[in-house]
Length: 377
Ligand code: ASP
Image 1: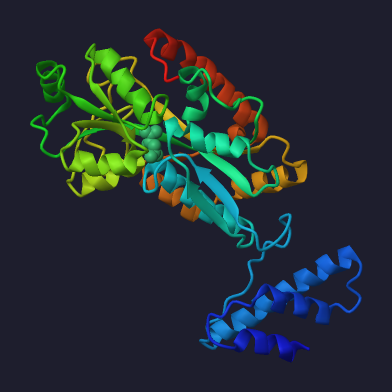
Image 2 (image 1 turned 180 degrees about the vertical axis):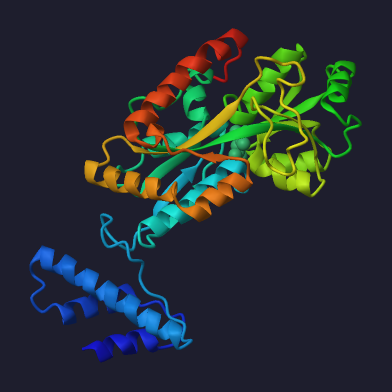
């Protein structure tokens, strides 16, 4: 019996067994497989056998691939999708992809893919998940805009409080004010003078009203009492290309994507939005907004994972366990820290703590947004 398995897996290198081969093997191994529980046990044994054979082959230098070992997730061989409401290549996208890798490891290799669904400040992607099947295969990875969009967009097609299951918060990210490489200013003081001298002509990136970049840019403008031309993009990645090319002047965005550009000397860094300076080698000489005199200027954004409302408790528990394991994964932690982000390990990684935090952020930002009197609906 084992020989037939070996033949399946030792055929051409890197050949993935087809689903019908796996089923054939399962039923060859399980003549009494008419009892569901026994079938599940046997499937686990088969997967273990495949892993063992793969290990032996790896030791012999023979390449093989085995089916993902997501024995326990509702069903194997179906990808989990993280819907990411911004363009690929930006900081939220990067965090989602890092989390997908770490959660996949935590789930025994279950495949998790990221689907970028940008547009309308991210609300198109969020709405897609609100309306998706609640089977645990379509999840939302979203930043602070989960809490701010309901105030900015008064006719949102979903309800943040009622349409989602909260799976846990993942990380917090400081923001960084950067400028095109040709910006004449070389310090925050010089930048403020340049802004005052160029009123009406200054352009600044945003990913749509309510997004991280928009909140930071909005605070900058109200603090300086200067109106800038706020240019909307589908996310940081396309805007960064334009900033580097000099098509826009300023960007205030997560350090995750500003750090590599600062290191490559493709942009100039002026201030960070945290109360204390950041430890990162490329940002330790960048002052905080508070150091340059803006006492109330503080923005730290956060990112979390959500499922559509009504997802089963069994699935939610498994996803939350995987998320918590991911937040302790050294590779995941290292990647976030290199980007200036902090992995969250407190009660906000629990569904109740996550939801309570998002509701408190909604309450915190609503008056700030309403005071601006600008809505996106
Ligand atoms: N950082 C972006 C924002 O401005 C979105 C993105 O991650 O692309 O909210």
